[in-house]
Image (cartoon, rainbow, N blue to C red; front, side, top):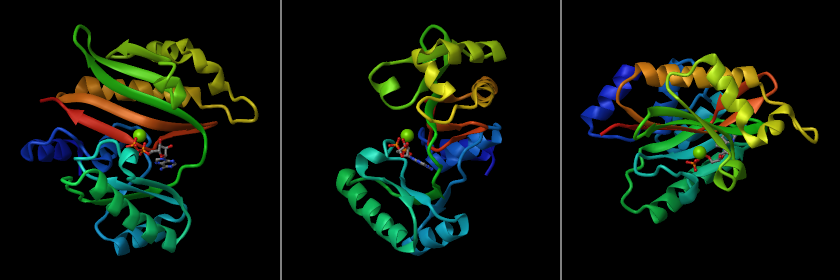
Length: 231
Ligand code: ADP
Ligand code: MG
């Protein structure tokens, strides 16, 4: 489905939350590299999609009622074979119905397991005074505990993106440390500008969360995405 179709359908269903699959389709259309993510409606389909994609894969709950998927036991990573996929499918179903009894679960999403790299977060929120702003930070404790993030007002120029990346305190980590591979800063910059361009040209988006984006030496990929529409 195209961005317009996805947005229209959500509006028709009076939905403000897009699924990870919808969010990634939209971001992909905006030129942002996301893991290809497909919906399975049964255990068997989860297996057949996994075999098409190739192991290792990641399975996640797909439900507009569950926005924080791992909190509800809804994410199983690094699944290496058919048996693990079958087990993961059943475990996700069981723990999500325990955790969120009323939630409508439309299926289980399947995507390739991205290899280790530097975890980044990017997103968009609306500021009461400035309107849409783009956020950039390093993933995990850097954002959660240290609040080490940078903001810029939409639309971003290439230079704004550059400044955002260089002003975070943990920026050294992007250069690679203790044998960890460096992050492709040019690619991250481009991603920020593309995100800003998308927000700038698409009305009705309230919030975007790309968490995490995994960065490598010559590439970066969004492995989780959330989009909330304006009321
Ligand atoms: P949540 O809704 O809880 O944010 P995520 O989709 O972000 O769920 O998954 C939780 C964690 O699992 C991520 O922070 C990331 O570390 C890991 N993860 C998710 N998808 C992938 C993937 N395709 N490849 C590798 N790791 C992944
Ligand atoms: Mg996430």
